[in-house]
Image 1 (cartoon, rainbow, N blue to C red):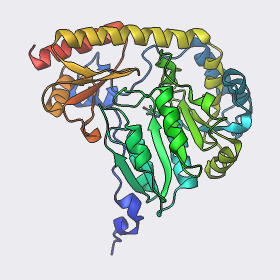
Image 2: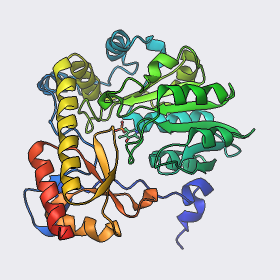
Image 3: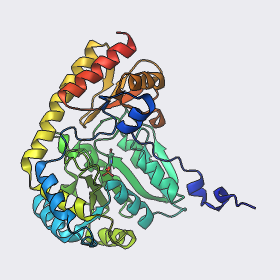
Image 4: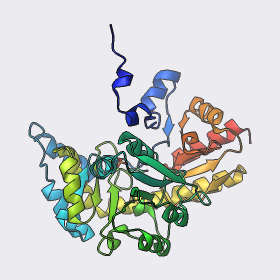
Length: 367
Ligand SMILES: *Cc1c(COP(=O)(O)O)cnc(C)c1O
């Protein structure tokens, strides 16, 4: 007799909806037998890796019979110099998603509440649900986080608040002034996670640098990633910066070798390739301008974004438009699971990719 394994799962896991990733190019090739696919679905860096990264990986490959340095000593030294952090403040992750999960596992129990915004990054509800905590979702304001509503939602049971700045998939952002006003209202025992996965793309004087707030707010954890502007999504490396006591706690639940040797070497190399980051940012900025102009000429509206992606309103249910775009060889990201049923999220690509994407939108929407 077979067991109903579903009944074995914890209640949190039973109620979980798995993260839905962007469709891989190879999968679409297999399914539709088409070639020359443009994938603008996962906010990946369109430049390809830095040559310094490719070289560092080749060098590190010969060490791959050995476990990596579990402390990430060398990478943390480079990061410390670059970002003005102590090594003891840094927790490395297998991508920053890993770190987000570590935070929930280290701090949150089934008795706790976790606050995040409507339309916020999908990993927050997943890690909250996985540990069996109660999610408190505050309504968005003009697609962005409503920090006043989030502060008002804090209760005696609140353990954690997730804030994405800028947020994915909306691309909306919070000013330093708004963020500091919020942090001033948060009790010392509530931990605020400031997810800065796209911070490198933002060029605005009013935009805060979370790392500079750590000294003043010991209950703040800033998470960042090498997946986006640094172009290492496939290697899986990200980090948290926090006060050393919180880092010590995260380190206790972290798998000892969660950051692999190729990822460590690649992250070290890309931090030392200043030209790569600058190119990422300038290609993104040009591509954003190109897509905005294209959407405007198609009569579409969009949510103003400071990330490497843009959520465009297709003016009707987005699912069929997404499907039709797939048949035209363009993969974008439906965001119905973010309560955005009429939007599609388009990652910023190279000029030719953006052009192909806009041509497919024109054809599919019949404009
Ligand atoms: C992409 C993204 C991440 C980072 O994911 P990795 O696990 O580091 O690849 C984190 N937060 C948000 C909001 C993101 O969009």
